Every structure is written in structure tokens, then in C-alpha cells.
Image 1 (cartoon, rainbow over the protein chains, first blue to last red):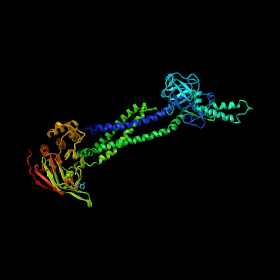
Image 2: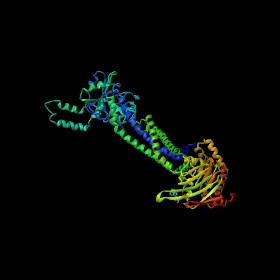
Image 3: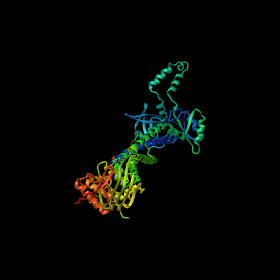
Image 4: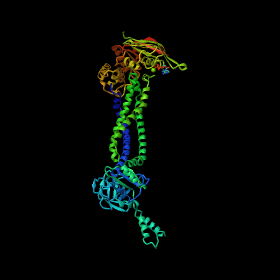
Length: 400
Length: 236
Ligand SMILES: Nc1ncnc2c1ncn2[C@@H]1O[C@H](COP(=O)(O)OP(=O)(O)O)[C@@H](O)[C@H]1O
Ligand SMILES: [Mg+2]
């Protein structure tokens, strides 16, 4: 027996190729969408991995520092660092903002890291070029995704920073490249008011008789100083010595009461379960729509191809072709279309992924799922055409 | 048991029931010997297609008896379970339009029938080529149907009708789209093939060009047939 489906496809290959490419682009978009989701999850995990922390200490009842804003006094870390089993505790600040270089500006997450040296939590674990920050002011380590190169002068708020080192895959959970600067600078960048605001506040303070008491010398100056200098950080990253349980140490830190502590698992749940949950649902919606559209395309094409063959199908039935042979012919065509679409889609996705601004992680598992989804969609969408073909009356071939 | 061609006895066919019932065939009697080509002639709506559909086992007769080759296929009810296999093995169909499968080349259009009957591809193609040669279209074996002329297509269709060596050929207006030279050529071929393969052939037609060629003709009117001796003009 010859393959009727194969012959038909060879005969009308143009239709199949064009539909296959169209379907393939749709499948490609679908795979990319799945990759965008995987990329977000991966960005989240990499963010947590690269922070080097085992525990995150944040402001009480907040989901900080990544999902919500959080603020802690910057002198608490000492108390955590002295707990048994704790290897180190470091202050850290995170602030997403526009970082300028000349005319250009880049959205980046500015990370303020304490001057504890490259082995401390919060510091970038690896550099691809240059060196770590060594001075306590105006040096920066930038992720290559920001487009900055060694020696660039960045402007963050009012100050200029020199790029001394580069990292790779250091991004926020939103996919923005990270730029590391010394903690003091970062605190200033985060909490610094502009000059006018400082002047206005100073004037208000001077006019306030509670602070401006001529018989208490130095009070006004102290108050003003405390208003300008900020002693807050967003979180304290705690590193635990090998052999100690993160959960146990978290419990003892929680005794402070005025803070919240998250372990690695909890942090991952916050990032994936809360921070990117809405995006994930958005992507899921798109996946559903794309699946429906793909199914509609396959169904429509297979339906029209079958419609065009009604006469031939009647003849095939009249000369003794089994229903099964005819159904199989239609199903095979749907499957060929699906496989063609999948191959085109997979190639498109693979080549297009690097051009997307955010990290797109194409997982082989998703491709396998995608392939089976395509097969199922093709089977389902050929049902309409098969039902129609089965209804064709062989008497139609004889005519009236 | 000797081959008997086609024997139709007391065949009737009623479309619909009750008020809408319509008797399209009324006690039709016909016989066509193996090797014989008879004409079935009648005005539009007289029941020609209904008769072919009954014989072709695509609609159910209401009453009567039909014998094809050496087998009673219908006697008040179908005597064969698998009507598809019956059509495939016992009946060759030739239509007004050739209805070739557009995506198969000429050879495979013909070879498809033995293939459907379970014959392997090589043997099926050999059989097909034999028939194409007999009908003098073997040189177009690898062409697609759309590349053939009308006459060539009809010859391929006849080859397809004959390839399984059925005891019966049912031809519905096989010459309608052809000019008289080609129409007569088709009838000559049907006659040659009928003799060669001992096939009983019924040709439904109202084509004046070919009516004189039949030795026997059945006239059908309002579902009733009567037999008539034809001119049986020699086919040059
Ligand atoms: N499926 C059907 N249902 C009801 N009446 C039919 C059907 N098919 C044919 N007829 C009627 O049966 C008669 C014979 O039709 P047909 O066999 O097609 O005639 P012919 O082929 O000689 O033109 C016509 O009157 C036609 O209207
Ligand atoms: Mg008719």
C-alpha cells in the first residue's frame, strides 16, 4: 500500500510548507513564552544563589528585600554576626533605578555592598573582567548585560562611579542587570534628598522652637545632621557555617521580634510564588490563547484540505477504501503539519531567544511537553475533518 | 459454477416512506452476459443512476434479487457483509468524469485498487501497467492526472475499473465529455476489454453517438425497463 497522505502532501506541498511555517512561528512564540517564564524563575534562583546568603533578615512583616521595600537599621548586623553558627552577616541595599552614562541610561538594580571583602554575602561571586571594589567610594562592578565596559564612568544620582569589574548573569528578578557600589554610596543614593529639599527641611527645623533652643547649644546641628544622614539598609544577608541548620539559626534570629527572617526556600517561594506569579498567570493566558489559535489553524487547514477532496474521498470509498484508511490519511496530514510546525517553531525559538531583552531559558522538558501538546492539538483538530470525511456517501461518486 | 455476468430479477427501489414515498425502480429485470456490453438508456429522472447505485452496492434496494458473477449478492437483503470489499473485488466503476485521484500519478491511480485488495505494490503496479498498456496509455504512466487530455483520463479511469478483473463494469455516461471519435474509441475499448476479461458491462448513456453500437439496449422510463435489440453497429 502506498501512503495516500504522503502523496497528497507531496502534491500540495506549497500549502503544507506555508501553513507549517505559519504554525511554526506560532509554536515558536509559544516556546519563547514558556522560556520567558523559565527565565524569570531562573533569574530569581540565580539572584538568590549569587547573593550567597542562607538567611535574609528584613523589616518586620515585609516580603523584602526583593518583593517589597524593607528598611532595617544598619547596625543590627553585628548582633546576628555574633550568633553561634553564623559565618557572617552583611548589610545590603537594593534599588532599581536608571543609571546614566553620558546621554545613555540603563535600567539597573543598584546593589550596595558592605566593605567586608569579596567573600561576604551580597558580593558578586565571580567576575568576568576587572577586579572587585576596593575603595569605599565611587567604584562600581557592573553586569555585562548593562552594556557598560571597564573604565566607564556611570552617574548614579549626583555622583560618578568608575566601572572596575564586570559580572555575568547577575540580574534582578525583573531581569535588570545589577550594578554593585559601596554600601555608603548606595545608602546615600537611596535615601538622599535633593539639595532644595535639604535646605527647606533645615529652614523648617530652624524655625521650630522645639529644636532651636539657644540655651541648648549643639541641639539644632545634631537634629539636622540626623535628618540628612541615613542609617538604613534593606536587608541583612546572613551566611551560616557548614554543619549548622539554617532553620535553627532563623529561629534564634526571630527572637529579636522587630524583624522578619526568611530561609532560602521561603525566599524562593516569595520570588516565584508572589513576585512573578502575576507574570506567570499572564504567560499562562498567552499559552492558552496560542494553543487555541494553533488548534484553529490546524483544524481549518485540514478541514479545507479535506473539503477539497470530498469528491476523491467519495471515489475512494466507492472503490473500496476503508474508513480507517481515509481517517488515517487525514490524521497523518494533521500530524505532519504539526511536526513541521514544531520543527520550524523550535528552530525559530532557538535562534530568536538570544535577541530577547530578558533572559529566555528554553528547557528541553518544555519542548517535549510542547511537542506532545502539538500532537494532541493536531489529533483533536483533525477530528472535525475526519467526521466530515466519514459522512461522505460513496453514492455521491455515481451522481444523480 | 459458470460465470453469469449480471442478473437482475424483480428489482425495486423506493425512496422515502409514507406520503413522500417514491418508487424509483419498479420490478426491473435485466441480464448481461459475461463479455457483453449493453446500453441502458432513458430520460433524465427515469431511474438509471438509482439502478447503478443498487448494483454498485451503495444504496439498498427495496426488493428483488441481484446476481453478480457467480454470487447472489442481494435477495431481499444483502447476502454479503462487506459491501466495500464487494465493490472493490466485483465491480469496476467508470464515471462520466474520470474522478482520478489528483495526487497520485496515473500508474498508482490504477494500482491503488489491487493495493486496497491487499496486493503488494510491485505486483499491483505490474497489473496496472498491463491494463494501461491494453488501453494504450502506458506512455503516460508517470504523468499526473492533471497533465492528461480528457480522452486519456477516461482511458485511465477504464483501466482503473478493470484492473481488479471484476465480473462487472458499471459505466455512468462514460462518453459524455468526449467528441465522437474519442467516444467511439472508449466504447470500442469497453467492448474489447469485456471480451478479453469476460466482463459484463452496463453503459448508462443518452449519447446519440454511441447508442447505435449496442447489440442490446434496455430502455428505462419511470422506473420500468424494457429490452430492445440494438443496431450493434460494427466499431471500425
Ligand atoms: N435520494 C433520493 N431520494 C428521493 N428520490 C430520489 C433520490 N434519488 C433519486 N430520486 C428520484 O428517483 C428518480 C430517479 O432518479 P435517478 O435514478 O437519479 O434518475 P436518472 O439517473 O435516470 O436521471 C428521480 O425522480 C429522482 O428524483
Ligand atoms: Mg443519473
